[in-house]
Image 1: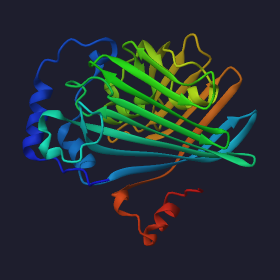
Image 2: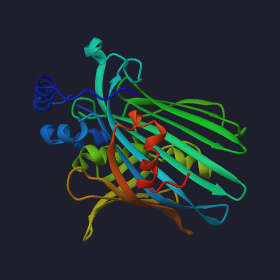
Image 3: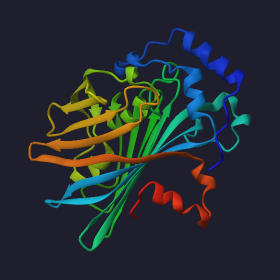
Length: 304
């Protein structure tokens, strides 16, 4: 990975201009989006570093609680609007470049003799006024039974193309279109960009890919009710599915940069997933691949 470009004055000016323009009419949740404070945002996110967060993960699998690690890596990148990939030469692609906040999310846990390794990447535009929808989500899951891969791509700035490849007969291969929906998997990046830009009320929501993989539910949108609550030490985003036995609660800092403190998933049988922040660092981790940097894993208290 190349170091993200530091935000220049000219680019800041462009973003400020875009923030002042009247956005085109967009569907549903996009009307709630807003632009982050550029100066504050750039000072934190455009200094050539990623934010790496480690979490204690508890997950109920096969009727028993399992313990593992979760990692959330947030970093800004220049993304190709046409190819929906990270640009190799952003300076040569001005007309195709969209600055995004990328989330790499990893779960690692064991079930008896074998283990699970799950990862997904979410690419959400920083300027949600100009580009109101997440551009892409890709997810992979590996265990000793086999592996699956899912990719969601925005098409025509409205609908999503959903593709899934799985070793389960009933799950793969799938290639279908999802009408204009909000993605559960983009809520974390939207919170980091601007919590006020996350909609509340009833929305058409696609459940998270990790949940779909582990529950073997079909990838279909469900109506959900989103609420924001304040506690003594944090704010909470509460997602309650109306026709699916699933509730998600995300706790995050009350002030910028709105770090994710914890999240949990539950159903009528009780809590299914709980992740609690252990440590957080800022690091150009792609440059920290020498053995002498192995101690950073101890700092993050990683057990894999």
